[in-house]
Amino acid sequence: MAASCASGPTPNGAPAPDKGAPSALTSSAPAQAVAPAEERAKALVQGASASPPVPPASSPRPGPDSPPTGASLTPEEQSYLESYLSHLSYMVYCDEAAGADPKLAVAAVSQANRYLIEKLGRSVIDFDQIERNKKDQQASYESETGGSMELNQYLAQKFNADVYVEIDFTLSGEKRDDKYYAQAQGSMKIYDTSTATLLGSVVLGGQTAFSPSSAESAAVNAVAGSVWAAMPKVVGQTRELVRNSLTQGVRYEVVLQKTPDSRQVSQFRRALGKKVREVEQASYAPSSTRLYVYTFKKGDWVEDAVYAAASASGMNDLSLVYSRGKSYTFDTGL
Image (cartoon, rainbow, N blue to C red; front, side, top):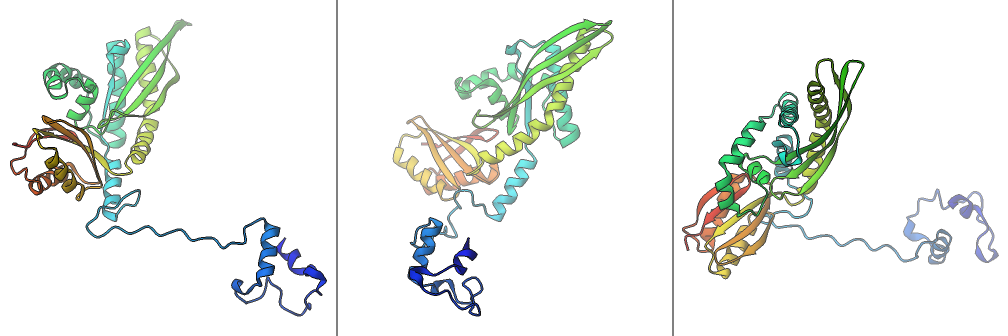
């Protein structure tokens, strides 16, 4: 198109340029030297506006003491993020409320944990440990949360898991040619431990297992085989989903007990905000205040940052009451 325009007759019947003269395509003259009339004609042919494009306004760069915002990460933050994603910890559980046979539930969780141990080198939380803690932690769960979160989420925080995975399945089976066949179908749902947000789900099933001895053995084989086949997808999907959820950093929950002065809480929030990427106040009451802190730092660093912000806002007697996972509860001493 450009070549034919350059070699065709010029407007108003003007003679074509001499063949020995350099064409517009080979000319070394800068583009700004093109005549305004020719520029407008070219714009009309191409359907573009004759007005030059306006360059986008440059965003102000944060100062040396300001935490970076948005998706831009410092090399230190990027390094922390990659390390965090490479060491995600899981709590896998099969909810008994779904009506799964206890033996099959144990088989499902054990197979998922086996994958985490053998393929990723993770330490795991076995099914019996979860069951014991459901009974032992019931009183603490009620006093600390008041039922504001699911028990599974609470236990995942207690075990310091980054995500928890709930397995749900149904079984179908038959006996054929003196052999027992079974197939498990369901899902493995991935939840963020801090927020209980459903990050994603992986389909479970499709493989038929058999046993020459019993229907129970066929069922165990079907569940174990389906979970093992699904685990690479669970791990891969978890990594990407968690990465996408960390645009502002890892979320920590900070609860301040005894906050009678809302202005002092505001001072604390601003002081803490200077040290992390973002601070979000989730609730306020004279008895307690709940904040969400986002940063690419470890939990002990967040605890130190809370102490520093407390000193800057006059809460000199603030002390840690208890912590579970990424949730920290402090007494202000007011």
